[in-house]
Length: 152
Image (cartoon, rainbow, N blue to C red; front, side, top):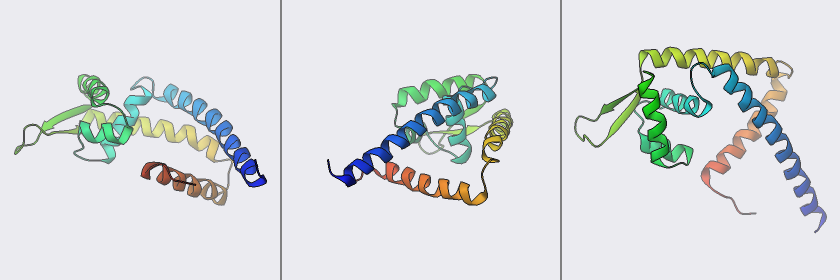
């Protein structure tokens, strides 16, 4: 293994170690602050629906890289809770749009506030430049992952 490969391996190992600690613990903490209203998976679905008006289960399945049956099960629970509603397309009854109910928008707003408060307590320890210096490459990595596996 040459020096360049060794350095890359070390960087990847550092990233993975930080990722696992950060996201494992943050996901638990986010789950705790929203637990009265939804699970973390449900929150992510609610967030997607809130930010993608008239989305469909198929779009959700693609966005989250899961089977449509998994999405349907979560949506059914959210419909039963009165958070999400299904609306059929008037021209093609096979198409079902998903949207938040008024109650769902209130729940979403409450969860967003709780998450914002919790994350703000961490982010407050960084300057705006440090935050931007972290987020910009993180967004770049997210875009690369979203586009597919890049070659080296």
